[in-house]
Length: 624
Image 1 (tube, rainbow, N blue to C red):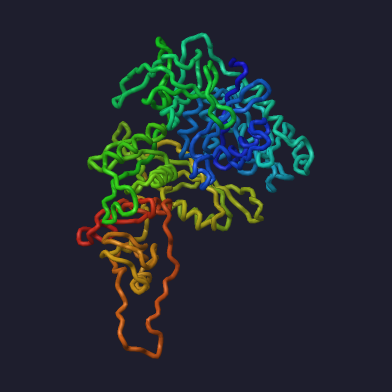
Image 2: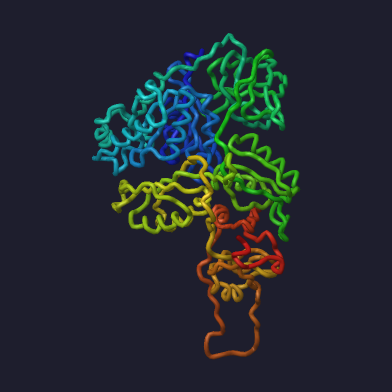
């Protein structure tokens, strides 16, 4: 049976075309019938994935090539979701590594390739987007292949892995070729415009190994949920065969890390046909499927026969930062969403941790506040938005990096290698911005023009993770929205000293009420407003950014006095300038350590941790 199975994953840096390629693999393999309606990026089924245009969690699907079943896993490309890539590596035997023909290997390319090499996977290199104008009539595609080969060597690939096949593809048009010289023919509309060369290469990959007659073993790589079946364990059958109704054992760990076992009968077995889950009577070694029967499941558990042993648990890179979650303690609590108690918030966060191996949970000294440890601002933003859409009200603080102490007692902090592609005219401003945040410029290279005709450069920085926090919006503004940014963690280095997160203060409401245009017109002279008129505010709520570094308590609800006196000139006409609308992501970047983000299903507000104006200082020195 296992000889008729191929298990592969699609790995790449963000936006290099993984999900688009999977779309065409499924379509051209005949997975869908002629009357079925399909959409773009079918594997991005989550609402946030479709809105943001990125893959957040790994997805499974399958298709048939003749009598061979191909299980394919689409993975995220953003560095914040690297744990999704790490947890699925045990399910596959081969990987298709996508690299953008113009951008070449980037930090996340290096990360996912390193994990694939460590798992000894057979790797296929696919140079995607060869139709980009910058890649046509240039040596860029050849340079991309050479850079990828150098990366394989640098990461310690074996001789077998270095002998990788090379596919040249245009995923969005659904064609590929093994011949570099044939690319111009395809670009002019000729050639066999299908993915057949890639299909043939997939069939040439090694089938999964595993003795079907041995004791059952399956490592739980993910957990799904069904309203009818409860929790479902997703993974690859390493050895043995499992049948519906069979009694098996779950090998897990308790809250203290001690090994525990649990017997349970299998209620249902599911396998993948296309993107659908279909019920089957048995699964054998090499196949990927889902097992229902146990309500207690965690990623990393082993499911085995009655006399089987546990497999090594899944290990992922450690988190580099943490964010504090709290119940909502503002005066508006309970008005716009579901007010939750601390135990409910704690349980909801623990449920999320169980299904996401790259997140961690820690209690704090305060009963109604909890730490969630993760890898980046985007990962936290996705989690916050997820809870918000479920109707919860809560508060979050600013993300902070996790420090360590070396054997000599010295303070160590995480450091990242950051790659920036941007217009050359913006390089001076961007370089200054990151050097102010302790960034060290390692490389300055001329890059492709990206089709706009303007000269572009690629900057490589080594920078503390603290220095990167909250700079995404500033970077986009500095590069007029045309800059690309990516990073990878490179370990811990000695603490680099104080880094000022924000050089400006806040405009803070000093009383409860509804804002007026008359009052805001006076306040806007002191900074930038975040809200407009007729907005409910309370004491301690942040309504704008102060032009100076100190905070400023202001009256935003002052009404205009009406009299029967008239003048020949303007009767005090007020006008509000541009208001800076703060999205959740902008709030996460902007807030400081003494501030909260209040999150409700309807609103995202900023506030001081101490609401009463006479209980907190407005001086920046006191805040630091």
